[in-house]
Amino acid sequence: MGEDELVLIRKSLEGDKDAWGEIVKRYKVSVFGIALGILGNPADAEDAAQDAFIRAYQALHTFHLDKRFSTWIFTITANLCKNKLRRDRLFAPLKYVTRATKSHHNPEARLIEDERIQTMREALDQLSPKYRMPLVLRYYGDLEYKDIAEMLQVPEGTVKTRIHRAKSELKKLLEKKGVIGRART
Amino acid sequence: MHEHELEQLIKETVAQHTAAYQDRIEDLEYRVVDALPDRTAVLEPRPAWPMRLALAATALVIFLGGFWLGGTLSDGPPCADPDVLCLVYPNAKSVALVGQLTYWERWPMNGPDRHGIWWIRLPRNLEPGRYEYGFMVDEYHWVHDPRAREFVHTFDNKINSVLIWPPSRGDSP
Image 1 (cartoon, rainbow over the protein chains, first blue to last red):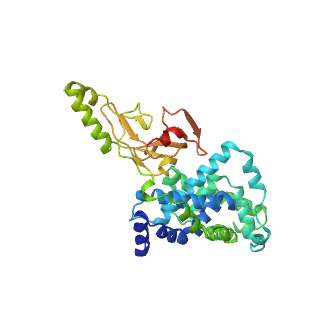
Image 2: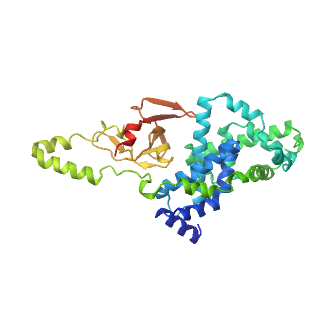
Image 3: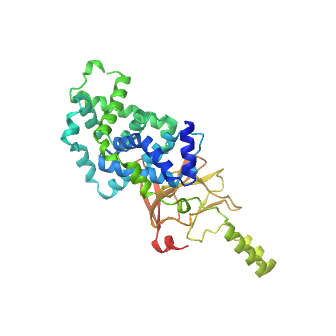
């Protein structure tokens, strides 16, 4: 962690909200990205990102200054997303089906995505959260397996297995869409 | 497709998706700062034996005398209190409360007492609501609270206990 970042966190601990605003500014894109990768819905991801920064501020005294701040804030974000997915599953089980089969893209956003990206996004949407979450945390969040394991409260081996299965599933989906050929896999 | 190509594509996909909606978080820092509570109201783990309670207990001990002192000490953890969570787990080396109210951080519990009871008092300023939680025993085993009135299954086949914190209790000083 950079020295200036440490200063910002210390100031935030003392109640300096502007210092926390600077932290938010630095991490908002990656936190929003984690939430969007897990939830798939921009509006939900926006809420999750905002909530994550507020909760992180409230729980800042539990953060160990010798650890990576990004890992800690991503953990809070992922747990909020996990809770959101759980609530959705409990109270609106059909929402998943709808979300997995319908695109939430606006036309402008759609234009900038090439076919591979678009297909991959649809494939990621089709994965169950159980597999999508570790995948996003690992390859977008750059989190270590052990951090993901701790976050999901499963052994490290389980995380590796889930990521392996998720990638296999993605390959199959991409093959099915013709984005990658069988011979190359 | 090679593994690293697939991994790169995953990263790019999430990054592009994020960039496409980045306007949604343009002013996020301002919204967050506006919504932040004052530091004095920040949620903090409440000590198991706070000063005020310690003073009250001391006064009670002086008032009631030695006979009652013995009785008080033998009562053990205050598991009957509605704001105390308890777990009987005599063989555990450590037990931590983990859940929505701890922001999924581990809050070490007190104990064990001579009966193997671990306990933790909930934060005094806990906001009314519904909180999922569990106990992390020996840093690894996820254990539900047998005293909880409600439980939920997680998508990874675990059981979370549910705490309903009513407004009247949350509003109390």
